[in-house]
Length: 214
Image 1 (spheres, rainbow, N blue to C red):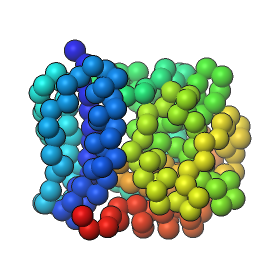
Image 2 (tube, rainbow, N blue to C red; image 1 turned 180 degrees about the vertical axis):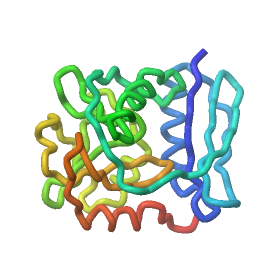
Image 3 (cartoon, helix red, strand yellow; image 1 turned 90 degrees about the vertical axis):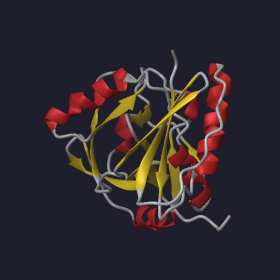
């Protein structure tokens, strides 16, 4: 049985990215043939991550702490990306890829497709700066339609640019990792090599959770 998952950040008592979560839920539920129950956005309380697990007509809700926003260490995984167009709980191959880099000092695995093109990491959308342009791999490569990425398209000057990138092209670029639970974090190292910073990443992080009052 397919379980559709959505992880929603509560920030200062609100779920500022809820409209983007709802849009992704509706699209995935339609594609997977799931009846989407009424799901209300979380409100109030401490900063936290609320996880919805949705099956046919049922919703299970759990909560967890937000987690670290420190720079992450990426290690390129030897296992190719398999395609992950919907956020479902059948993600054992992603978990295995992440666990595979932990013994060699990685926090997460950078995943490439069979042609060597950058797709995403196991829990982050991964982008890079090209001058003033913020670039991410095209979703046509099979990466998750990331709520964090969609939010960046709203707050980045000029939006997000879809650019195909091979692993070797990432060398010496400033990288950005984002997801809808922890927001934006810089990438500190890639395959053990230091990754340069970019002040634009910090500026985006400061705007990421801001929403106009409803």
